[in-house]
Length: 199
Image (cartoon, rainbow, N blue to C red; front, side):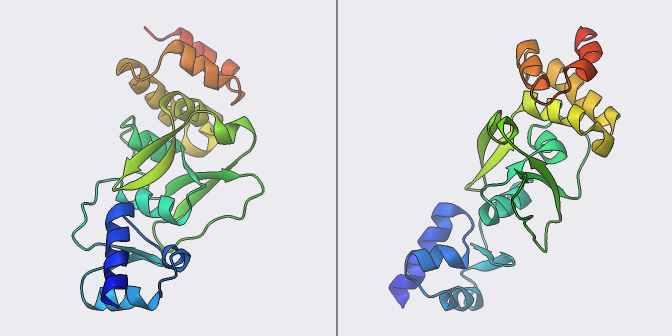
């Protein structure tokens, strides 16, 4: 039992956050998670999510939890702006892109705001960030800005304009990159006057 407990703790150290299914894949009993929580060697950080109680948690720690439970999801829009430090907004929900026909993921916490993408929108402009030891898929800066214009009715044109100005001011994206993602997002005409007015 001791060696299986150590294996689980090593796995938590390696992955940042673990789920019962991670143990099943290694042939380890999930009841060991409960024992380790009782001993104070693991903490339950959400439904079906466990981590070391002393693990470092960044300001984007909730995204790590979402990514561990839903690894195919892509952090987008307001949540991606936050990751890229391009907004003063602090979203109360995690904005997550999933395939058009996929079943919507559910979590007790944090609340999720689901956006559906298909084709190139699911594969283009996606970066992997490691947050609190967990790989998290996030739309890149130029793609996030284009998405903000595409979903301006949901998040507000002011948010999209702030994102564009910040990305440009901080030199986080080139004009070519912005145009590249404006086309597949079908917002080239919407973005054109704002792109042309950039200093």
